[in-house]
Amino acid sequence: QVQLVESGGGLVQPGGSLRLSCAASGIIFRFYAMGWYRQAPGKQRELVAVVSASGASTNYADSVKGRFTISRDNTKNTVFLQMNSLKPEDTATYYCTAGPTMREVAYWGQGTQVAASS
Image (cartoon, rainbow, N blue to C red; front, side, top):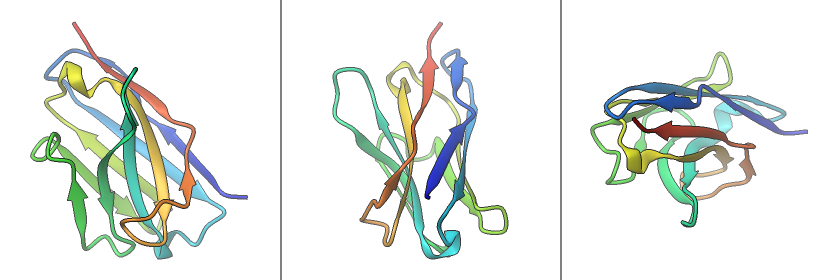
């Protein structure tokens, strides 16, 4: 049974930082590309960032480049999303994903809420 369990969401003031974590089980973690998607109320789900299975390659949405960093620890089956300089428009539910390539998603987590508001 595959499980992707996100943590680290919360409420921060604009300009603040959060670090999301996603612990994976039920998959051979080092074989999967891992990603973060988000969905804001009334909007479509969108890709935020993705990292290759080895960790050597990353892709980011233009809206988060320079502010967010995705990383992974293959010894701990965990992927991270460091979010700095948060803006109100970053407010959304953030989902962890796992897929066979950086362009495919096979599994989704349950999501964690992030809100940047004063």
